[in-house]
Length: 270
Length: 314
Image 1: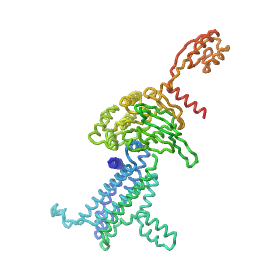
Image 2: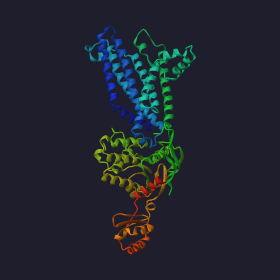
Image 3: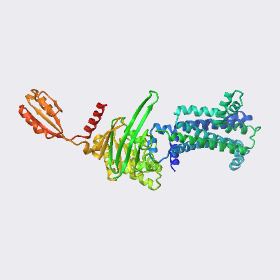
């Protein structure tokens, strides 16, 4: 499939970029600092490590996604490599899809790498036996941190949605403009409780603007479950439905953004 | 013979929003390129050559007009499997090796393995890229190696119709000659080549027909033979009498007559019948003819004359 070939090439080019590795290495380093910080404050050790880990995955994921995806299409146009691609039997939707799949793969790889380190640390923090009891006993004495997996998985889908948004903007905006638009919408989308309150404002104009922002912009805030999964006192009601709905929301919203991206790119001269 | 490219009224206008100006890049272009010919598409920088090629390949969209490639509408994705394009500058993914680049483009043509690897090897051998460079990063390639890789990528799908935009520019003489031979050999394989080039000597050698475009407008088209027809004869006359009315007499007969020295004149005429009359006048003026040299018009002469004439009339 042509889109897969383009995706593979996209991953290859993205992995060559130093900024990707810098973000990833710094993020893994910061996640690794969790147990050290926890050791300094034994009472809060679990909370600190978990909060830090999830926050680092979110922030590093955010920057890796934006910095990777804003360049995927513009760089092909700027370097004119797009001429030799689109002059071949490659449909423009295949090109956009290939670019998205490549960006998606990078997001997946980075979240998976950070998530694996984070989950391993959380698991070993929860082991009830030490290595002196035997390696196998020690390795199997922990409790699989399901709720942390939920946090990592939802961050991944949040980043997938952000990747689709960034790819959408990259079909018509410069990388710099794209950076600010994607980043800005991510921030606003994370303030869904604020934008929701605007919808009920007594001022008609404020209410209308609030509704547009709240219902039109992607609701990134829905994917933030850190508070609920870190603090034992709070819990997500109907967790299965919540996860399913969020994943479906991310998939549908991403698909709509990609369709819009294809429509715009189809009309763009290169 | 069927037309590989048929262009009717192709026009591209750009609007400069800030200056509220309309720029016509290609103006009502009509052109036919027959299958199996190497067609030279000539013009100054900014004449509209690349824009025309990009419209034919669906990279930019025409403001008006239409075209067919190999019998199918321009922009039809199905015809692209039989097309190839080498852009003016060879823009590649520098981190890839020559082999990997061709393999990638082979994937875009949906060529399955092991056919794809076979094609990659054939193409790299055909363009004579050194074997030790096949698995090296393109970043370290010279201009000539990049250009060879560019032609190789254009051949990966064994195309019927190739668009080559300045394939030999900026190369050393050996690489230049080799790549010209490679392009010329495509005709023997029955391929149609649409060659945009400033290397008029190359075009004259390898193209069967050419078109000259200027400011988006087609000025002339024809075979090399037709365009360079009309052998020109240069006659040098020497004698003390050149100033004594001889110049005027000769200019009346041959308008392209000029003084080249204190006692020499140069006459240029395409009409061989005038030569004996010139000799009679020269003898009558007690001067003598130093040389009579026939000159074939080069494509460059035709190009320069055609473009200058158009610029003067504009």
